[in-house]
Amino acid sequence: MTGEKTTGSTEQANQVVSRLASPVSLVNLFGMDRERLRAQFASIGEKPFRADQIMQWIYRRGVDDFAGMSNLSKDLRARLEANFVVRPPELLTEQLSADGTRKWVLKVGGGQAIETVFIPEKDRGTLCISSQVGCAMDCAFCSTAQQGLNRNLDTAEIVAQVWFAAKALGGDFQNERVISNVVFMGMGEPLANYNAVLPAVKILQDDFGFGLSKRRTTVSTSGLVPFMDRLREDVDTALAVSLHAPNDALRNELVPINKKYPIAELMDACRRYTAHRDHKMHIVYEYVMLDGVNDSPALARDLARLLNGMPAKVNLIPFNPFPETRFKRSKQDAIETFAGILRGKNILATTRKTRGDDIDAACGQLVGKVLNKQKRRLSDIPVRAA
Image (cartoon, rainbow, N blue to C red):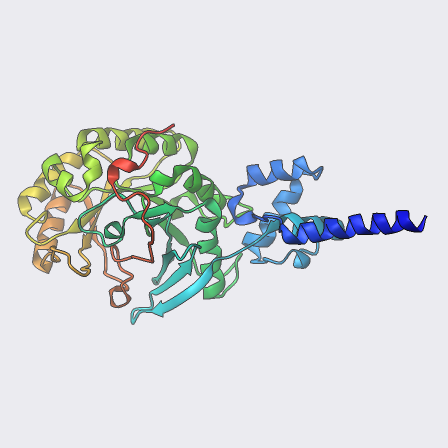
């Protein structure tokens, strides 16, 4: 009998040691939208509403410790601890601009880092988040593109940027929100990482998630037409298109994806997007102003003709320089003339105020830390929707 007990105890001890030697890979709940989270809980015999409760704890109350989720049973909390984690990114550096803009460099593993930027304004607080480690679009005027692409971020890494920023900025997750708008305009081409970005948008808009309105989440793209069509059907969100030129010859030079999806195809996709029953808003067309390249009155008139009759807003962006670039920022009078021509043709045009350039946090300046570039060339990335 004694030998049997000893054997049993030894086997149990060996099992414990084995578990310790092979740690369980915990699932980061930031990566699960409500539909997936409900299915996960149903698979372990829990009621779907438990998923709603946990999302409220994480996104509405800012709680990342299961022990603090007081309306869950002790047994459920223990099961959560054993299988899941709410893991925010690790901060590497934080910089504060003279204009109040904040930039965080966040560690994402493997020596890689991404950048997330918060831009405070009188009537809003906009968070610019990254979707990839680097970028393969190779846009000529963008510092991020010069870094190449290492990998896509997963949904958890995307959503965690918002949670991290909300924590870092303080305030109430539910009532006195510091972050009112989230834009996918950081490192990477969001639609080239569609399968991770889509659930992230859903979590941002979910009433049990961050609860942002559809008009306060914006996905930017350089023009991946098939994924624009998928986005149109899958979720209702604002769309920004990086246009930067009104003709194919110039856009091929500035935005190489145009060689795969030329302006005519891109504009057709934009019309389909705004014609959709759920999308009752204009598209924002981003246009970086490059001295002597794309800022002439003639090109302004071409742009007005291109957008004629479309629900459009043009956001003119003064170029933000970075090391070794060949471009220069357009002169202020050229920007004003360009905007005036558009407005004279009944095109809504605004000039983006440069923010955070003293900490390299302005549009086109984000670089992070991109190592072991796996996919540098535009031809290497997926450009057709599955």
